[in-house]
Amino acid sequence: MAYKCFDCPRNCGAIRDGSSGKGFCGGGELIDVAKVMRHMWEEPCIGGDKGVENVFLYGCNLKCVYCQNRKINGTSDDFDKSRLMRLDPPGFAELLVTSSQTDAASVGIVTGDHFIRQISKAVTEDIRSRISKPIVFNCGGYQKPDMLELLKDRVDIFMPDFKYVDKDLAGTLSRAKDYPSVCLRAIEKCFEITGPAVFGEDGLMKKGVLVRHLILPGHINNTLGVIDKLNETFRPGDIVFSLMSQYVPVSGFCPPPGFEKLSGGISKAEYKKAKAYLENASNITLGYTQDPASSSSGFIPDF
Picture 1 (tube, rainbow, N blue to C red):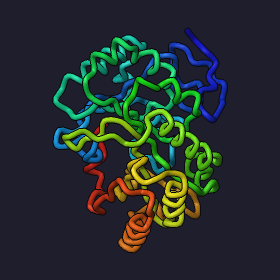
Picture 2: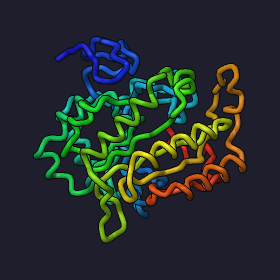
Picture 3: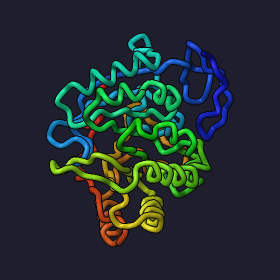
Picture 4: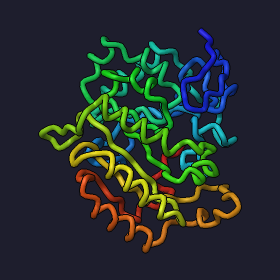
């Protein structure tokens, strides 16, 4: 059934029906699936040596100008939309069940921010009982707490980005000046839902919140601010934090004026400073830093 959408902080009021493209995110009434694939390069605690069976959704409510998955975020003409699987909640539920029957360590829903309403209807109690491994909700961090509440008992691990503490940076690169405050509230809500991180005897994460942050070239102070905010907000063992150095400008990317450094990768000095700062954050005791060698297009899924 078509509805007027105020589900995300943009509050654009788009009519979402059987077709897509009317609102900022580009999402319609059905869930648009761009690709299902095994991803071997997620954090070790959710992928182990088997990886994550990721279900990549199409569209996005952020559409960051440097997006490394831009082919499927709704801003690129390089993706053939005829390839999309457009699924109602029961159809999406069966896709998740099928994805869970592989030998992957977990099942990931990637960029589900603009389909929370539909996902919550898909993952019923019956469907949840048929999926014996963790469901990971991999998202951009730009959500309303009341929408995240719909995912309670439906997903096990929330994996939000925390992209910015600098509202001007967020405004320029993601057209969302309110991102810093919105994202922190969203992460706090995720933690309220799951509680502290829980790990099994196999070392894999079973429940909790894993926050990701991508270092942006030329904006190291933004990274230090993200670390500060999380260190102030959470206690040791509450969350897992992943400091990512994999930024790489994608083909055809043209940085906004004044952001020319986004045309290259992060420097060794930036990485070293961010890593040292994280090591001194006494309340962030669980997490990862990423080898700068990950700054390669070879680690970006082929859509």
